Amino acid sequence: MTETSSTKRIGVLSLHNSKETKAILNAIEAFGHEPVWIREETLSLAVEGGRGRVDPDVDAVVNRLLLTKSDTGLADLGVVELFEDHEIPVLNPSAAVLRTTYEPAALRILADAGVPVPDTYQDFDGRHDGSGDADRRYVRKPVLGTNGAGVSIAESADGRPPASRRTLIQAFVDTGERASDIRVYVVGGDVVGAMRRHAPDGDWRTNVAVGGAVEDVTDDLDESVRETAVRAVDALDLDAAGVDVIGTEDESYVLEVNATAGFKGLFEATGVSPAPHIARLAIERADGDVDDAVLDEHETRLADEWPACAPDLSPEEDFRTVGYTESVDIAGGGGIATAIAKSDTGAKRTTVDLSLAAEVGAGPLEGTTSVRSGSSKSSSSRPLVTLDVRVGDRWHEVTADVIDREHMNYPVLLGRDILDDYFVDVSTRAPGDATNEE
Image (cartoon, rainbow, N blue to C red; front, side, top):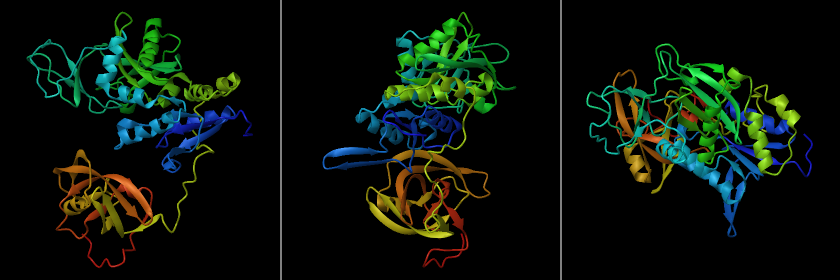
């Protein structure tokens, strides 16, 4: 790619390696502009001499953060505001994504804008007055969720089942013997493609992630459904999103708007990739030029090969190797302590002893997690706290679980949230570690 004065640097903010992220980056390059993958390895913030600076320096940003799959979603979203504060155009700005991700807010905004949504209820303390139709089915779903996780059918003999602070109760929309809905992908006010999703046998959820079958309905899409999807995205101030519409031509509802909708399934169904459409919109927001011929060529393939702009993620041998045990620093709001940690590639999260967590002032409390220990069939609930762990000369911010490990040899277990970045050499131990294995 030859850079000219008209070449724009377009960042894609994505902390994961999804096909969609790579396809958007490759599309930006195909348009003759410079793609920049904004991720942990490339992102930094500084305030010096009374002025703030965000690196990398870009002309526009495509926000592809997956908040519902992140332990630090709110902090991740704050990164978007760093660019917005510097008046850099952002596709799917932070405020819009926050409203959309929190489904009660999104449904209220859609309803106020005249977009049809199913009847929905939320009682923060779980109470309900028995109102509603006892013969009617309802859907219980989390206020934050994706891919159909945590969604179930709810029925009650005395009317509408109760909801809570973390769940919604929504009227069930019956679409016949085999449940189906339509995912409409909207970019810049235009429908890029639409697919009908059919629930797998024995299930009523239509999500591709749970095995839903898809078919192309772009050309056959009812005009009212098309207009409803575009209006929903506009009402939420989004630039690109997937809109789930359920019902019949006579009566349809918007179930959900996904600000970071995947489009692998959409491409398989329609043969159209939203990636170049998203890339074009970002380039135009940066006052860059695009060639429609490139769009026409690029939308017919999902160019998800590893992008040339990807940062060098090759391991550094003297830093990226950890032993069976390591001397680590644990930091919280109350200070820093040094401890010997055991590497445990079988653990999803890092675990810290209760006394050590208290000593460093770990926090804030991020909720709880259920953990099954060893061969035991029972599980225990453990609190989750935010803390920093230094391995070698690199700090890792993690959401660790806390348990009393006083009777164990090591106060810290390093889980895959840290070890995924390292090669574990089980033949080496931390200096001074003379303990036996646990």
